Length: 351
Image 1 (cartoon, rainbow, N blue to C red):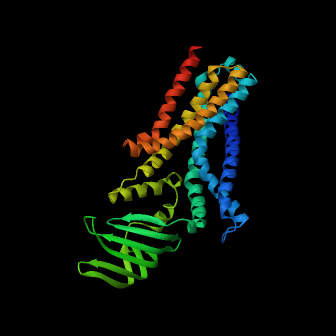
Image 2: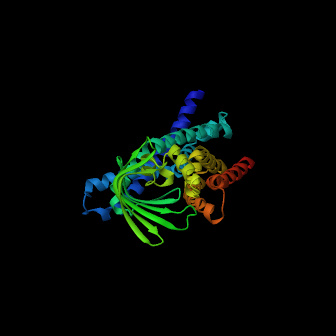
Image 3: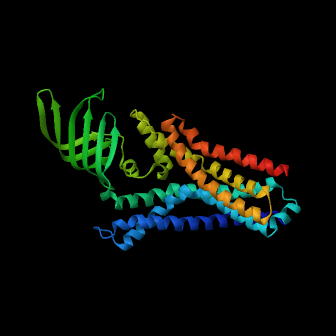
């Protein structure tokens, strides 16, 4: 068989099966999101059409979470189907080595990783911002630290921020010195900072509280509207560059950002994660070729995909519990499943 034709057949088959599994998972997740969103029905601004649109906007972000599971199960489905029809046996007899099979499946995994990363960079941040903007009336606002100050923002709009409370502390960060409130403000890139047409300030002094009115107040800050808009989004759904900038901002202000750092490294490690899933799928198929055994291995592989998803969630908590390094916490699930894939491959080679 021509090598190019073989490559297209194997890679295309894995990708088609992966996308079919992804579609099935997306339908299931869409159903659960729809059930969760039904409590909004009848509230101001929430119609059936808007609920359907809202749940649809959440689905690209769901794919980011389920991509490793979808690739593992999809690759298992494709390989199991070929093994059941003796197509893998014919390819092995024709000279296709296990490494040659892995190389082609790995290429399919890298293509899926590239598409997923593009989705995460250009589609998910936009859809999540729209969805969270629709839901902003249900949220209690956003807390942000800026230097020695703490800000509470009730709403972030494309044109600025609304109902802003600023709690100012002394240089030691132990005593509250003032509380400032502004109904609205906009970002001035020439400062850089925020400009508020009107507002009020309560100064806490030794002899009492002094109330002041503010006119054209300026708050110098490195927080931009783009960064604030992304903070309504979960870390794993933020754009990679924005995530890196916000981590640097937090560290500059003396804050820890373990969840953001873990999400940052997971995005970079996504190609490696999908390669591990592809290797694990091939290892399952190579251990035995009988139809009955393949069915059990398909079930076990699906279980391992769900287990990987759960371990991936748990590893992010280990940064706080065990003070684990964020890069290591992000890579830990892939490292554990790499060991499992190598063990299964070794057993398959010994048969």
